[in-house]
Length: 299
Image 1 (cartoon, one colour):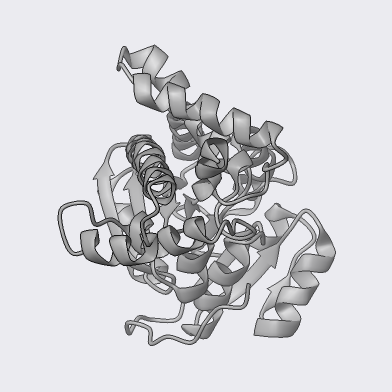
Image 2: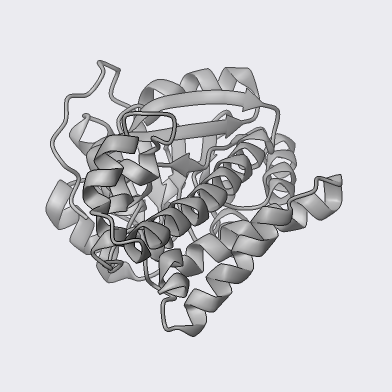
């Protein structure tokens, strides 16, 4: 999970905190340190924070509140809505330690509702909150090449954008609070349908006796080309799935999408179907397999 070397856009060193050092947060925080920012980290498992400090320098804090003290920007990347509330709210939460005017940037894929809730709580305390889910997966985090879709107010967004570019190739304000999470739902919806189509195409070609690596090389130069085809096609052919974005995580994300669709009336029949296909993959023992493992159902 070590952050890969890259060049960083010039920006003034900033005092920041990073909460959550999982497969995404660990390298994202590493890029912030390598870009010259003063980084304090905190993690539910303290040993992970200490290990990060040994690798990148900076400082480890026992609680989100301690990590956030004195930071202009507090980044977080945790598991879900409840995890997010646990690091933000309460006596030991980040909001309790942040100075007036500081910005909390949440990279968790969470609900739009919790983004709006915490944006309101931040404003009531003289703080700022930006929901900023990311796309690009573990590889994007390691390479500092994520795309970040943000919801919130323009002024705090502009303040955090140059800092976040340490681990991103694009940081974009989509709209008001919650809009970043809604954009991530669009992202996951598109990926789900695309992966199912790719899985069916590869399975069909293999059953037909085609050299599928050659086929993907050819059709990848035409209208069927996609990031998933370029980055997952070969490993799907090889039946390798012990890497990447886990099926469990994708089902969590699709659950958020389907919940929001029930609220806003959007019709997502293919997304709902693919979510059930992922349930089949989980039943096959593939909870931690990459999302491209949809093809396992077809073999």
